[in-house]
Length: 155
Image 1 (spheres, rainbow, N blue to C red):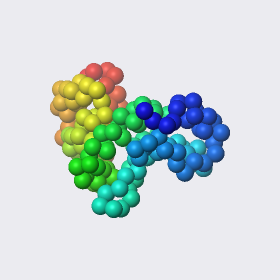
Image 2 (tube, rainbow, N blue to C red):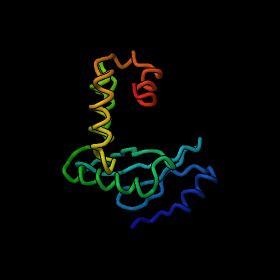
Image 3 (cartoon, rainbow, N blue to C red):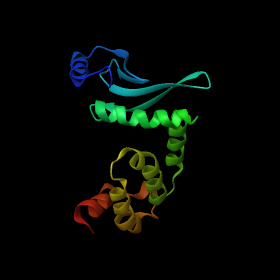
Image 4 (cartoon, rainbow, N blue to C red):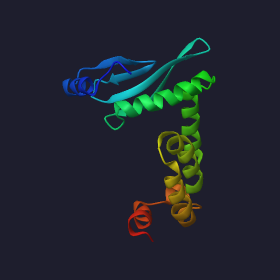
């Protein structure tokens, strides 16, 4: 499958030596910064130009999950979609989201539906419990106590 192993990754992280990039193949690259932050990056070319998309941090994102997401993103690149630009546009839209409902839709489209095996479960909880309760509220007005009441207490 790929060129990297979990053992190698753990060894590199423990050594805390910066790694500008170790390829797993097909553009998936493991990087380790000077401050010890390990990340997965997808490197690709589009219209002759080199691009990079940060997929997530290791160990939060495992090697197998990084391979899975990279494969999905490579399909998008083959369809001439600049996946890094799409991610940046999503960040801008998230900052512009005025209410919880808008932010939830962005999150579903860009994080849940493409990465989870059963996105319908998360979507159902959002639509049934969270959006009816706080969907119209301004994002900045939602507190941790509000979320705790919804998610923990079920009120």
